[in-house]
Image (cartoon, rainbow, N blue to C red; front, side, top):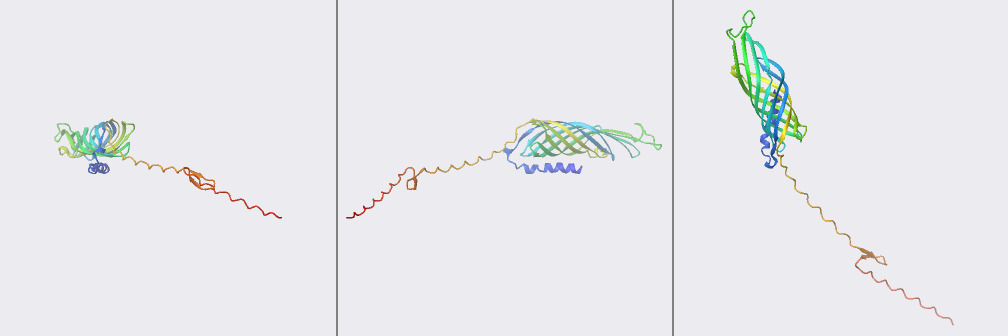
Length: 262
């Protein structure tokens, strides 16, 4: 119970931080409906009894930029009953249907996985019948002094935590644990219940959160200019192709003729 309550309150405490998220990052994640089945354990008069229960949930989810928040209504049916010897008689406490209205908040730990907690108001139909036992150990009846029968509604707080895992764009699977504390209704003794369940749901699409596009990258720098065309002159010098090679030097003069002998 303490772990479930801590998980729910921790997740919901993030609401104040995420309220500062820009409005452009917020949107309707969707409207969801879910069928649920699980194990139910009802506690009363220091006793407990467990059985399989089933129910459903419906809610609206708002995406606050990675944090999901929204209202949820749940229905649960697990007619558990405890029979306890107390105060000189047999106490029979039975729990019928349960309705709850909660605020659910969680974090998208991956694009398809939501880890959440919730807290809300819960109301449960119950009845308690007390039948005295005489000194001989015989169980009395409706006419026995001390007999009473009460049929009433008990209410209190519900805490829960769980995981939603998207299987497709719309279908999801869930695992949840929750604790309902019905207090001491009619001063007939406090009652509470623990539930562990699995669910299969459908998320009716809403508008996705608007993401702010990053600024475009700066344009690439212009390519460097091409090197100018060149030419190599006969004397081995390299000049621009638009220039004229220097004229070659004149050839050396011929050697003087040899003197004649005479």
